[in-house]
Image (tube, rainbow, N blue to C red; front, side, top):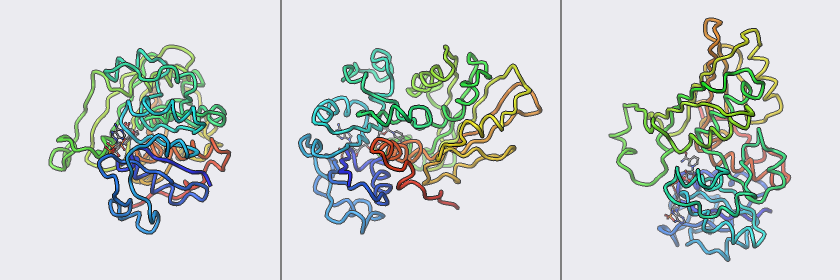
Length: 344
Ligand SMILES: NC(=O)c1ccc[n+]([C@@H]2O[C@H](COP(=O)([O-])OP(=O)(O)OC[C@H]3O[C@@H](n4cnc5c(N)ncnc54)[C@H](OP(=O)(O)O)[C@@H]3O)[C@@H](O)[C@H]2O)c1
């Protein structure tokens, strides 16, 4: 059994890790931290987990207890993994970080977007960006994984086939993305209140969202050149889900895009290219570690529209983290992750 520690177990990605790991035949959660709920039994806080984690209670983060695990997930705000990852790695514990701490390769750029200096630039050389559809081989031998963000996962998976094939104009990409409210985490915030976010929809961070440099980094790598991206996130009144509507222009309109996407993801267990003409729905991936994609070229023009949906808490966070765990420990990549979405 793989001995697992989770730092930040009371948040939405933390409890989603618990839900997924409860079905995982090779992982056993030994330590789960929360400073505010220390001493509380996991099943008392999250009754959906009753019967799965008997005897397991939240504890304050303790580096010795965490270092005794084979792997530690960080489901914490940015900055926390910076402070603790080095010590764990030195003890031989692998780290899978769901926060943004190690996603950007440029520490100065990270500091610019996160408003504080990077706390562990010396570890960046070890960090592997955990998008299996791009970095599977590097993940296998990594010791520090930076799990991609939710918007970045939906956007990159939607645009990669076009950019890798050199088909899209990389200078004019548009990502128009919608997220459910759980994307903001469990912390109390006025904007997440039911009366503030229900029955309404709005764009935010149009001048620049923290996921912009992360998406740009991945797309630049796929295109092999600089890219220009306009990324506009929106908040929608749903609990889970990301819907990315992606726009790119192509010079060659003779290419069979459906075949291109199907070929690119033919061997990917968690990317589903839908039949031509489809409109993927977020509810079809709710609770599932799947990115569902459809590609369109309206009226046969040169503008390609890609629709990409994920569950922000699963393929956009905790499911992708477990996928990384499986690859890292040489297990079947689908282990504990093969359930279908929850519909209706
Ligand atoms: N929500 C999403 O859809 C999503 C998707 C992808 C990635 N992410 C990223 O995943 C991370 C967690 O997100 P979330 O939505 O689960 O957040 P959250 O609901 O706000 O939970 C944060 C967790 O971290 C703990 N924590 C906070 N400050 C800490 C500190 N200084 N030291 C140790 N533990 C601390 C909290 O527990 P205590 O305060 O009790 O210790 C809590 O359990 C974030 O970096 C987020 O950007 C989130």
